[in-house]
Amino acid sequence: MNDFSHLDNSGNVKMVDVTDKVSTARMAKAEGKIYMLPETILAIQDDALPKGNVLTTAKIAGIQSGKKTSVMIPMCHQLNLSFVDIEFEIEGDAILIKSTVKTKEATGVEMEALSAVSGAALTIYDMCKAVDKSMVIGEIKLFKKVGGKSDHAVEYRPKVGVITLSDSISSGKGEDKSGPILMDGFKNAGCSVDYQKVLPDGSEELVSTIQDWVNNDVELIITTGGTGLGPRDLTIETLEKIFDSKLPGIEQALHAYGRGKVKTAMLSRLTAGVVNGAIVICLPGSTGAAKDALTVLIPTIFHSFHMMSGEKH
Image (cartoon, rainbow, N blue to C red; front, side, top):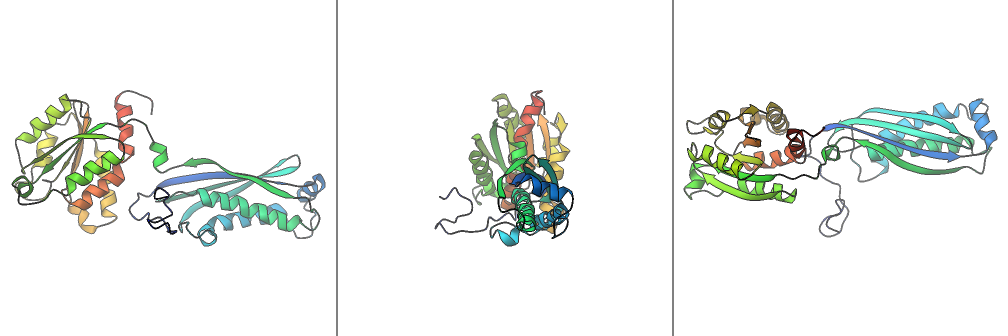
C-alpha cells in the first residue's frame, strides 16, 4: 500500500505533494456517451425541449465541471486551467460527449477532463429526464493524455557516475551529502551507479577521471560542487575546456527551476556538455541543488541517449 501515492505510511488518505514538480504544458481528452430515445435526440436537435437549449447548457456545465474538479474530488489539486472545451456528436441512439482540457501546471488534468464529460452528461440527463426515462450515461473514459513524465518515458537507463568536489569533504573534515542524494536518485530511477569519487576543489584529477569513466562506458556523469564564486571553484572552467559541445537547454532548465524556488539561485553556476559521447552535468554542491536536479533531469535526460544514437525522436 505504500506504493499508492494517495496513502501515507499509516494507510491514511493524503493529498500528493506536487510542490517540487516541474510545471509543464499538459492536456487531456475524455469522452462519454448518453443513450436516449431517437425522438429525444430529434427534440434536442430541434431545440424543442421545455428547459431550453440542451447542448449549449450542457457545454457550459461541462466547462464549469472541469474548472470545479478540485471542489468535487477531495484529493485533486486546484489547477489554473488555460482551456476547457466540450464537443457533441450524434451517434444513432446516443450523444457522444468529448472534452479537452489544458493547463501549464505541476500535475495533469485527466480528472478535469473526465469531470467535464460527466458534468455535461448529467446536465443533458437533467434537461431531458421529463420526456425520456430510458436515458443511460456510460463509457466515460480518458482517451488521450499529453505532458508530464509519461511524455518522455523511455526504457533505456544509462550508466551513471557521480563526482563530488570539495576541499573539506576530500580532507575528511566534511560529510558528502549531495553525492549520495544524486546516486540514490539515479539508482531509484533504474540506472546503474557504480562510479563515485570525491576530489578537492580545482583537482587536476577531474579531467582524467571523467575521461577514464567515459572509456569505461559511463554515459552520464554528474559533478557536484566547485561551482561557487571563490578562487578555487574551478569545476566549470575545467569542464568547459573538454566539452565537444555544450547543452545549454539543461543549464537553462535547471536555472529556471531553481529560481522558481529560491531567489539566490540566480547566483548559482552550472554547465552541461558532451564529452566523447557522454553527457557531463556540473551542479552546485548544495543538497537542494542535487534534489532539484533529480526532479528536472529524470526521466527527460534519458531521452537524450536515444537522440545521440541517431534514433527518431
